[in-house]
Image (cartoon, rainbow, N blue to C red; front, side):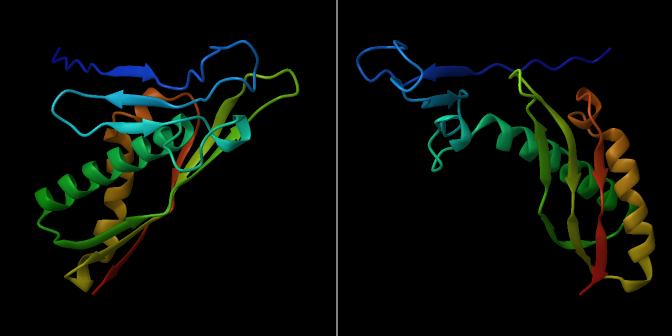
Length: 155
């Protein structure tokens, strides 16, 4: 088996001087550092006392699924000789939090809008979304449905 390993550092930067003495007494800010790459500034979602100007884990999970699908789709199109000139995905995710707390994602839906050069290959390109879905590392790693509602057009 071929394995790839990933490592990063998360550093909490939200100590306001009193640590976690109370739920509202600390900031959720943190830095995600990966060697050789720009740092990502993170926080929790605003619903959980976070900073809306920073990335949160929920957004990053949806982004990871969307990005992985896109990269597989582009790879499959390149292999098939389908020239993609534009790709935008307005992905959405649903996080369900029961009254007892905790919670989990219940679904993510991808909405890729793809532009290709050859109108006669739009159906074939649309079919490659299913193959990309099957190949996506991140989709294969989550325990909730990931749907893809892709639209391909020539332009």
